[in-house]
Amino acid sequence: MTSAEINTKAVSGRRRVHYDSYDEALADAERLAAIPVRTLGNWSYGQILRHLAKTVNMTIDGSSLKAPAPIRLLARLFLKKRMLTRTLSPGFRLPKRARSLLPEETSVAEGLELFRAAVQRARTESQRAPSPLLGKLTPEETDQFQLRHIEMHMSFVVPADESDASSD
Image 1 (tube, rainbow, N blue to C red):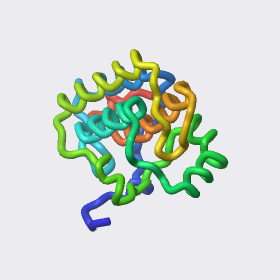
Image 2 (tube, helix red, strand yellow):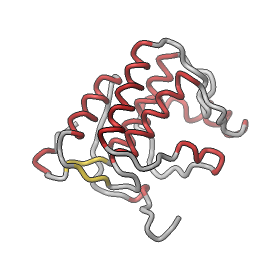
Image 3 (tube, rainbow, N blue to C red):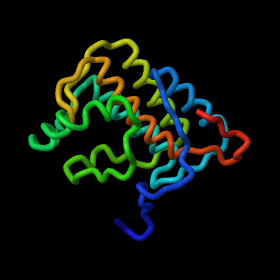
């Protein structure tokens, strides 16, 4: 971690968000894109949206990324239920082989369009690929895991004007 990098495990002031559907996540993303926001982590809002679009698309298209077998087994046995029902914890550092998931700088408008397109695919395509961490999941489990992932990242996006904050 460089000195300019924020330790996202220790960030305070994040929003509390929960999404029951991709539609709810997209509505929140669109609402935030229409107002001035600030991000509390290391990525811009555009980068967050690009990353979310990429990972939603990966749930359909699959990925060459795969956690090592012992980690997959432990995650499936001990973390699966939590990861499907509770917002993921921040601060996970991607291994070098997964750096392709790190988003390049992206405008909010471009990131939002990418996220809209990914959400549209998730709404209309029933195919779901195995998770690089949890392996084969039902389509509903895959979507729940992805919604927990989206919640974690979107919690770092806060209205610049506190009067625009909503209690989610």
